[in-house]
Length: 354
Length: 113
Image 1 (cartoon, helix red, strand yellow):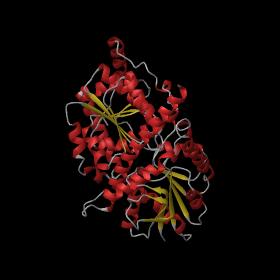
Image 2: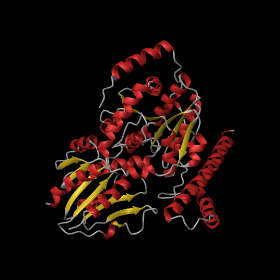
Image 3: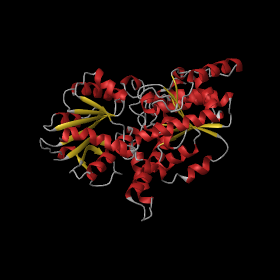
Image 4: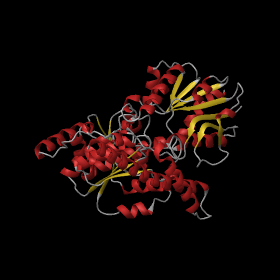
């Protein structure tokens, strides 16, 4: 019996890619025969670790784990296999967010959601990375067993050396606000900018905003964001573009607060990263964000730049509040320890193995 | 977890904002209009999709020169080399993209005038 994983695109350093690699390692530790299959493989992935999904061959007793986050040919391919099938659902962004900026992507998201609905009777078990994702599937009519399995995050990587170039560039007495995530419309960078603008103009002119993330595919959205910041007259808004891992670490080290105004997240790994770096989190309550924070951080239910901007100041100047937020986050972070998630994974897998 | 009285904090902050007569943003994000060149993504994607038609040749030339000119330490592993290349290509291609957009804007202005 073997346990294999299928992922449409095996990326290097992204949340799904890391999850796939961590599960691969865990399967190998349990001495099961395993392999990763993908339609596309990032050139930076170690050679031999994954192969083309066309080469996938299974026996009826095998278990195939499909990572689903978009429309893909391999989703149908796995659904039609004659073996035990598990889907790890990472969520698909509602197409409405892309309709103006990236019609092709909007179409892909719409097709992905259609495909997801069609596959509702194809799996023996689904592992949703958050309760929000589980609810999405239930609404689509999924009747199989759905369990929650958070993304496995390789915390050891965060102890690597941060970029000294970035650290040196910004090491001063400015207050740094950080948001990290691809520059895509569902993440609502404009609301981050608006809240930061209020904070900077009313409380702290010596402040800067780091928007760390790649705008690939949504350069027009990034362009609009830059014009917006300019027209608001907001100073020190930095769009980093494609960022190397050691640079990401440096931005986390430099930051004083993590500000998230995203309106759609299937899990939101940067929230966990912010917890790891002891950054107080101020986030808007949407999609999977309340699940991931689970009572930690500071959540707002209202999109109001003035309120959010003033809350940035409150959290950064009220030491007792900041301390409580960070302590609560540290407690929540324990739930995401690799070993805990891995043992949860095997608890679910054993149901299929037996 | 220690309890935080969110409601009280938000109530106090709201009162503080009103008392402060704080400066609020007067520009709405949705009111910002992109011109044609800004709206059309002249994207250059190393990993996956397509290069914009007009800049494909330029980018390929740059890539070829870059690969010839770039030297790496033998101690660096393949991942680092690839990553450096991606960074450099993206850096260069964003410059090409900027120039391409500039040309488009100038062309539009010329037509309009």
